[in-house]
Length: 180
Image (cartoon, rainbow, N blue to C red; front, side, top):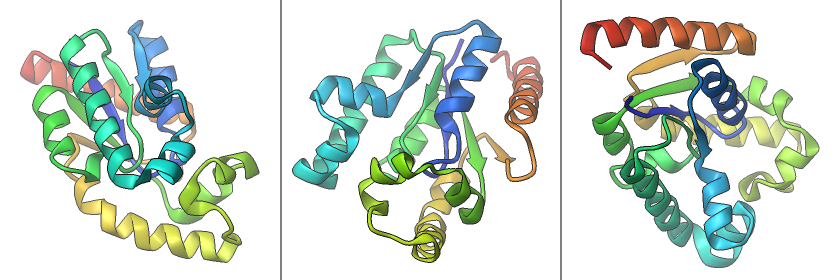
């Protein structure tokens, strides 16, 4: 089976939904952020903060290449910025099926716990209003990359289970059409 890559903005539910999809499909699961942390022996925020965004993105790409090269991980949750760097989105589309989990900035802000804010370096120190404004600007810049996904799911009004069911139905249809 080709890999299924979940893309979208930070906090949109890629990790939670990725685990649920993998479980429902009976497949293995990986999270690129967790793989970066494992490889670097440091949290994503520490790699980002102390080594810089350029180095973080390079490590992220190496992790993506490894996941693709091993071919053993069919469900992959990506970091929010991974699709926007280099040719990562095209690479994922070439080897698998990409799903963009689209949510509004307001909903993501509501979903983020205080810990979720603290662990994301770009969100630290922002009050609620500043957080939503920052996310709206950042999401607008990333949207052209995310929209290259094989499937776009508007998640704002769906429960996690409804999102999973929607993706599974679309995967089944895509497999029938393309032998995926």
